[in-house]
Image 1 (cartoon, protein in one colour):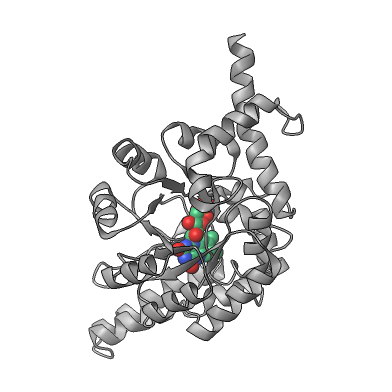
Image 2 (cartoon, rainbow, N blue to C red; image 1 turned 30 degrees about the vertical axis):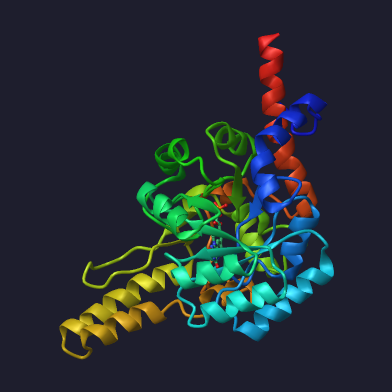
Length: 348
Ligand SMILES: Cc1cc2nc3c(=O)[nH]c(=O)nc-3n(C[C@H](O)[C@H](O)[C@H](O)COP(=O)(O)O)c2cc1C
């Protein structure tokens, strides 16, 4: 079925109904979150997504509080629509970053990268913001809700960037039927509206997509970074390989390039030096961890797609061209509505 044929209005109304809880939670037209992507999700992409009816989220990453304040103000200058801020829980100035969000009247704070400290959740909520947490398992989902999470994101291992071990297909079955107290948003490997529809019907409140938005026209990522996404296939977006269990490596899904090959050589050489007594264990571990320092910025901003980190989800194969954010959102919603309409026709 062609994406170009507009589905009937009743099919769009059905999508609105399925997205109602998630959209009301964000105050957006659609329950689609722009997954925060460090260096990528800055004011231009975030505002474009929110203006298109989705919910843009700024990636704070390693930004210091004054820099985050600047980025929020910059985004507010580009959109009147709501957007959120994603904070990494291990940031040394996490609570100050929460303060920055509250001062700027950001309505939604997403805590990523681990279990957020209770004090940060409390501060955010007392300041009037809604709190969104990542839940990598059912027990943790329940614990986050007890700690005050107003909504959850479950992110499968198909996703781009830092990943857990379990696919969204399984997480959705394990978590969605059991969590009704708060809206749950699904993430990882989603590139089309039909997939969003299927998760909505399983009980998700909405979906978070990252990779699919990298080639938005408004996104400031370097043209070479975007080209890598346009060329990339699902099988090219692989998790980092760990050579030795003595030296754990954080799993990150990214497109394979010269950097990922050199990382294997770097691990092998570092382990050799450790075994030869040239490095102690801590120094060797640090040496391995430092390999990727600054690598995402190198790829996204400088366009060094050979040596930088090309974090991307398995959905990368569904990125085929650069197009405005509003067109991507319209396509996703159109695909979901078309799928519903086809059922109506089949039943008739
Ligand atoms: C380039 C890139 C950078 C990312 N950086 C972050 C980040 O800083 N914080 C975060 O919580 N998630 C980050 N993510 C994950 C996204 O927010 C989102 O959950 C993920 O992209 C969803 O999977 P998908 O890429 O298959 O759509 C990143 C993903 C990508 C592709």
